[in-house]
Image 1 (cartoon, rainbow, N blue to C red):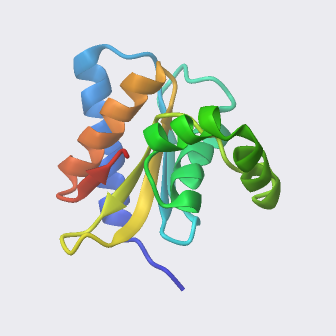
Image 2 (image 1 turned 120 degrees about the vertical axis):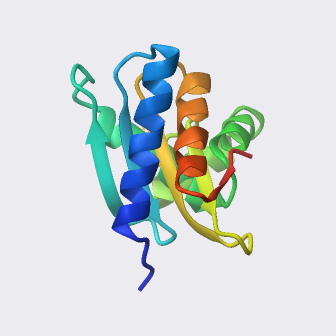
Image 3 (image 1 turned 180 degrees about the vertical axis):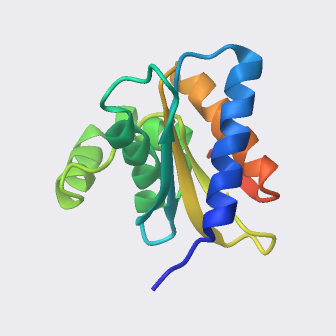
Length: 143
C-alpha cells in the first residue's frame, strides 16, 4: 500500500491556495493523490464549481498514469489521441490530459504522488500546483 502523509498534502493545498490568492486566480479545487492514485486530500475554495473534485483529481491521475506531468500528457494527447483515448478507457475515464497535473517527487527523485488543480487556466492551475508542492518542501515535476 502506498502512503502519502496527510500533513504534506495539507501543506500543498495551503501553499497552492496562497499562490492563487497572490495571483488573484479564480476559485480552485486541489486534489492530492498518493503514488497509487488514491485520493489523500481535496479542498475547494468558496465559489469553485461542482466538478472541481473530478477535474483536479483527473489531472493528477493522468500525470501518475503515464509517469509525467500534465503539460507533457497534454502534448501527447494532441500528438497521439488514440493512445490517450486508450489510456482513458483503461482508467475508466479517470484521466484529464491537460496541464495542471503535477507529479510530486521526494528528495531522492522518486514519484510519491501528484497534485491536480482545476479552476483557472491550466497554466495558472499548474503554477499553483508547483507552488504548493514547493511549499511542502518537495519537488514538482510538471513535465
